[in-house]
Image 1 (cartoon, rainbow, N blue to C red):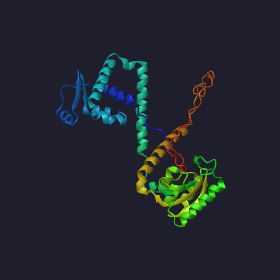
Image 2: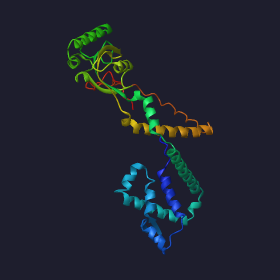
Image 3: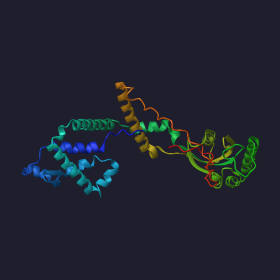
Image 4: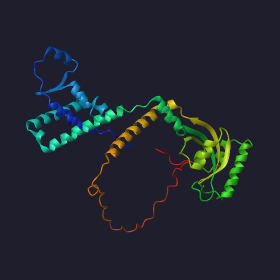
Length: 335
């Protein structure tokens, strides 16, 4: 999901400096009550007639992106202070030269003001989104399937044309592969250990060498036929043969698991909060029914086609013989 944060570090930092410049300079004499208050907010930088209080400096620190704040509040604090002072001094010089009245500066000041107010409004909307435990529990219950997992083993018998067909072994027709898978299942039901048969017979050598172990997987991680069979099987049950694009599978389910609500509550809350925030921002835009100048925002014309290069004389590189083989039952994992 797109980030909705609109803080621009440079704009926010510059704005804090420029707004500070608008304040009248502090006098040397200080009333007793002010002096007492200043004890908790000391001046930490001075340069000529420029003074920077701790609260001002720390406010500027908070305008930095989160990934830089830790450094700037730790080992990089002095370096940030020097940069901040340099900007204050340059801003002071600019004010004396009247650059605050320059049209381009005025335009950017207006942009900074809009940006800061918009970000404050975004924060207000964000704080207004509340999710109760009951809300989160309902989301969990409505999507419980997403938190289910199965731990299983399998034995794969590939047929001719399968991406998993082993090299150096006789190719089997679909009928032959199915018959072999059925025979292996009978052996297991007759007392043979699933793990031993997998090590000896499985064409998925990756899991086969580990007794057919696939580990735990959730919905959407396996090819559909395999997933359906595994999630429907009882613990300890040996099922199959199940046909997929890779061949015929004999499957044994070791366990059915489900991540408890408390284990995913924080993740659900974060995801749902962001979803609701995005929905409000989308509604804000859609309700306004914006129009855009299609001529101005038209995509750029594609570049002219380059002259066709001569066909290379060399043959394409051969696939490395030692390329790792993926577990055939699994799809590419989802992000």
